[in-house]
Image (cartoon, rainbow, N blue to C red; front, side, top):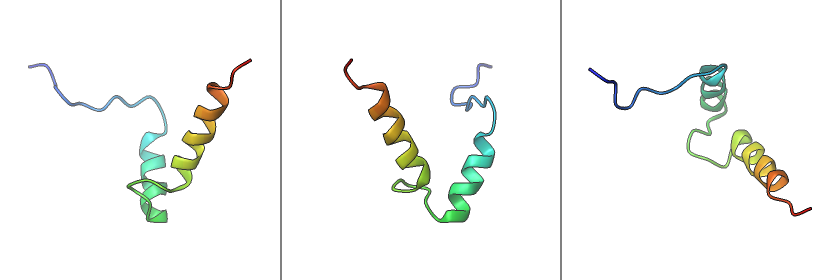
Length: 47
């Protein structure tokens, strides 16, 4: 059987999930959301 929704883990994902849970921010507006926004802003800057 082919797993349909098996999450692909490449490194420290479970650590990050545990950190988000400990901080009480599993649904957004936490540290990782801000990090993602910053990364996307830097990636999408025009030269």
